[in-house]
Figure 1 (tube, rainbow, N blue to C red):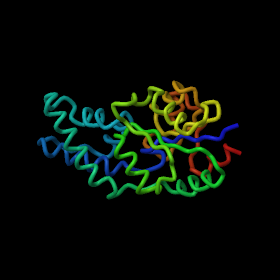
Figure 2: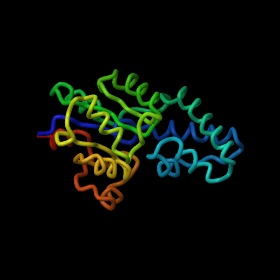
Figure 3: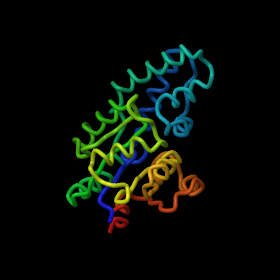
Figure 4: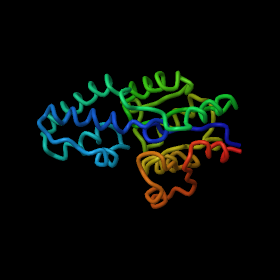
Length: 214
């Protein structure tokens, strides 16, 4: 029986794309680099902000300057990550319903940990008792470590858990963690890509998750 649902954050729970793009382009501008389009940023996200900036910089800076660009991004994003970010339509109702039905719920993201916890606080009023982001303490997705840590903190087992995500990273994370996977198409990737990387169960609206759990 499924009693636990672990969610990816960006592209699954929250539409963060515009704030990520604005923060990336601010950081690039500080180093006299040209801006990136929304569609480019959409393809760059998923593996954490380190790789987001590396992909956006695309070798135009030395390693030292690229690290400074990343620091600039983090500082700016921490102050501006609420400007345009919002939960996807229907997500709040689904999260409330899962809570009312006593499901264990958690967030696992490759976004840096302090931002994940802050977004959980601001947008979900900490309805998610566990929210884990990237840190030196745990390997990033698609390594299983963060998902397994979330299950440990929720005191539940992988056999009873679903992992919900929107990207190829999430498909691999679920597989590496031994969890069943549900892909979503309202995020940063499309149905065709999810199918290509092995997602068998795909939904197009948040409320469909509740039908699956029945």
